[in-house]
Length: 211
Image (tube, rainbow, N blue to C red):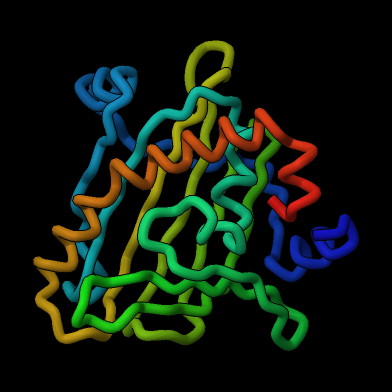
C-alpha cells in the first residue's frame, strides 16, 4: 500500500489522537503473574442482550507497543496470519474505510463474514486501540476492540487486549460458539507474536509486499 493510500485509509478510519491514555483492564496479582508467565488470561463478559459471545482476553508480546500496534490495526492483513481468517480486506465506501473479514467455520456450517467500521485511538503515552462496530454481515451484532498498552518499567513489552461482543446469525447454541471462540484464543495471541517477529525480521520485504 502506498504512503498516500495509508494516509487516506487512516483518515477514513477516524483516527483519534487522545490526550487521555487508553484504560488498562483491572488486573489481579494472579492475572499479572499469569501474564508474566506468557499465559493468555481469558474472562467471560456479559454479551449485549445476553445473546451471543462476550469475551475479554489478554496476553503479553515481547515488543514495544508501537511495534505491535500495526499488527492489530491493519485489518486488511489478518488473513495472512490470524487463525481461521479465510479472507480480509479494507474497502472504501462513501469516503469511509471499512474492514472486511471472513471467518472459516467447520463443515457443515457456513463461513461468517462482516464489514465493520473502525475508530483508531492513538494516545501519546503509547496507548493504542482499534474499536470496531458492525455495518453488515452474517451477525446480529459484532462489536469489539484491540488494545495495545505498555508493560514493564521500560515499556519494552506490550499488553495486547482483545474484547469481543458478538452474536453470529447461525443456528448454533451460544455456548458452543463461546467454547470455540475461547478455545482458539491462545492460537490468536501466538499468531500475533509470530507476526511481530516476522515483520521485524524483514520490514523492507514486508512493506514492499503490502505487509
